[in-house]
Length: 204
Image (cartoon, rainbow, N blue to C red; front, top):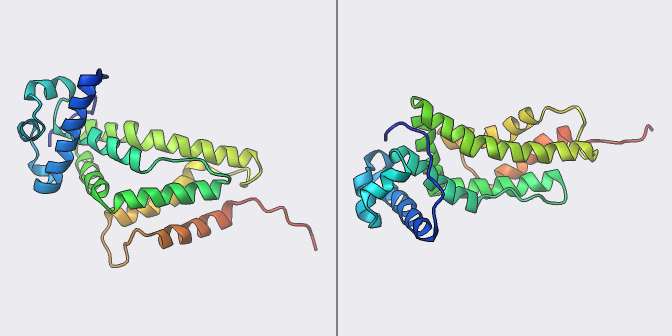
């Protein structure tokens, strides 16, 4: 895949339909052929959208795949705030690992791999997926700290690294027990939150 930052432009109703067809075709062909074999020509043929139209919205295949990934994973794995911070992250992380067990995980592994040598794609992954999601999660942690639910002197980024770093380790590093499961999330949540939740215990 080529090297550039994703950057599709806002479009009207017809354009939105064409965009959906293009992104669906990219994911479908990625499943069938592997993302390394994707070309704009193949996406145009599968989607029925002219190649010139595709190039007006995306500079290359990497940009299309980035938007295809975002369109799917943001729908499949939203962060929805619950009654407590612990419940919020338990729910969000379970949705995320469910999404990563399928096509989204394969797509993200491809994007992260390519991003190691493609600075523009790396910037797109950071600014369009990782950082917006981390900011939402930081805000949730900070609200929990202000409510007294969590210890007040925490570094939100370290907490997020501890929570999500374990997921990405299992996603990207193959080993025998690298299973993404609800039980894994429950165990991880217990270990992290037992250490960061505020305790107002009376002296005995």
